[in-house]
Length: 99
Image (cartoon, rainbow, N blue to C red; front, side, top):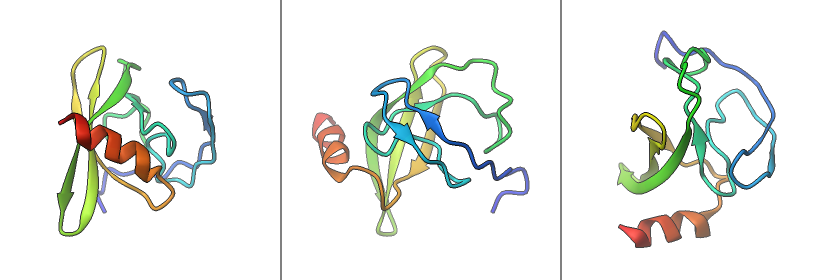
């Protein structure tokens, strides 16, 4: 794990689909719509000034794991995030179909 990682257990309401999300300290996107928010410089630090919404743009597969590529709609920053078991697989498939 990255030395700069800060585990932060936080619940939140998704700003895109309004679902209540129970965070586990590693949660970085909504498990329903898969959108995220540009809040970190390093994972968990909440130091990003942008605060823009991060759109799930693409899905990659690496070593049998799916990764969501998010792009900030405000500053265009891109970041990869692992799909989690609780993530909506149908939503992921719809994103993959758009590619």
